[in-house]
Length: 137
View 1 (cartoon, rainbow, N blue to C red):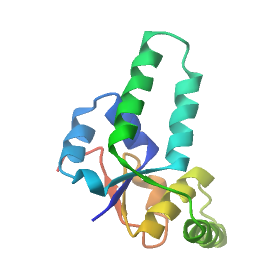
View 2 (view 1 turned 30 degrees about the horizontal axis):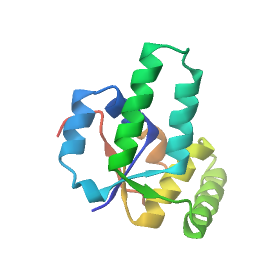
View 3 (view 1 turned 45 degrees about the vertical axis):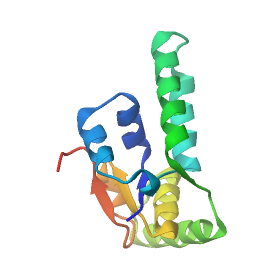
């Protein structure tokens, strides 16, 4: 089954976190996806770093990782799902960040699991399959 990676999982992979890398190795390469909201958050994080060796290394890690994973575009189906999820959360009084909703909406539009290291927000999204990649399996 397809898996969409949340920003914090991509960040952990870029930093060569053993647990995140172990979970990634269990996936078939063609089943691992990134999407534009995740890329936007990664680029924001990189651009906040001061120029220097650490930033260069992390940028290189992202480019390498990005070259080997699949890409999921923001589609009309994902946009519709975003609207539905945000309205449902608002009605429940469970507001979360728009980027988290967008990532969940893309995952749902793909019929994918969503891998994260912070399940607190994403588990609020109606019928989204959330996997905690902060823990080894």
